[in-house]
Length: 598
Image (cartoon, rainbow, N blue to C red):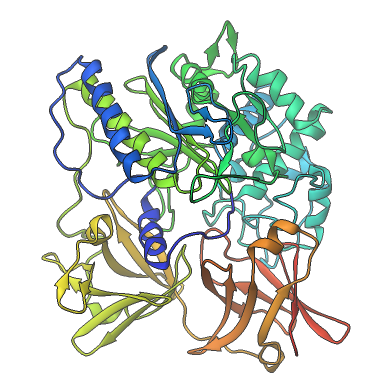
């Protein structure tokens, strides 16, 4: 889910650069004690010791972990406090917000309707949801289909931010109507861009086709038949005896708002309930005496394109991310993560070995910890199954399809998942900077660019996973320049270079500081200001969230509309300028920003 940034610039750059090959850690781990084939107890003992060691560095975090081997729960544990005000310890029964793991369940509901002939995956979404309409600038573009939404290729805007985080949201049907004046971000079917909005529209389609509220339908058709007794879809975060409190950076309980987009992120559940999904998967869609999905639907959901496009930031089946390069000889790894303003969740399945791991936390600081714990658990259990360490080493050597280039050829400003990254070539020195943080770029033995940092310009600093990432450049047939990153198996898109574009006087006159002027209290508390300005021939927007800020570039379409430049999540969205009471107002994703002191 979309959450305002809460990280330092350098840490954010590291996360963004690693995001091109979801979800794992790029660094080769320190050697671990060998685990003999069949010694599950040794694997779980190492996992427990590792988690406890990590939590000494994350004292304010909580964590619940569960591991499935075949159909049996092999191990579960809780760490830290689920609610420090009680105090309630975290356990395997603690209920958390699963965030975007909800999308896998929404996908399953869509597949059930397709099996029943009530929905066609390849028909326009409007067949299943007649009220759906959205504007398009793309001549001859295809219509949005259900399958495209499930594969994050719909071309829809990533989010409808206004009203997303609230305890009293508009209905899904009202959300559909709010899109009538919005525009597609990309031509449907052509660009992979992670999209929450599309899954909310699928929830509205389920309501239209079944005549039932989304949450009630999911409870009756999936959660109850799957035996997920501690799970429900809800606008509100979990409450009650076993509910985890939302924990701030110091581990203190605070309030997390409700979520409008329940089909995209509103599942409240436990780690042991999440493993019911793995049990279903390992038995070809059958669970608790019910054939919940057909084997054909199970196979379709976990089938990613055999030849992913260079611009794809992840291999995606239907609902699942399908990772073929994270572990050697035991894949593919089915994965989905979830995040809300505080909660984090990870679900990983290895169908070949019938292993699964679920990890959840309600601490704002625990996102990376949850991810690393899930990967650690999966690697250790796979070693116990096979007797071989499955963690793939970093790729070395040249890639004939994506050769290295001279460092100077990387120069330019790039849009990335973090925001703008500026690569500068100054004589013999090349550096990359994001906001006020700068790292050197050097060529490795194969000629690829890598990041380096020297404290005070003298003392080398180990950048860990960030220092092991290789970069090169790719020029597309339509004259775009891409910054590519290789983490483990293959190169993929990290950023698009932003060359100057003409800026009309109408947009120059709008430059200045803007304040949020909408009715959403969550947004009002997150965004301090928005600044529209020009730099190096680029029309830029800087969003100040108080603890952090980010920049994106705009490309004017006409005197009143501009699009967010770049590819991927949040890009391609429309920014519209209107005048109200002689003041300029910028509209984006339902939000209103009014110019200060024009």
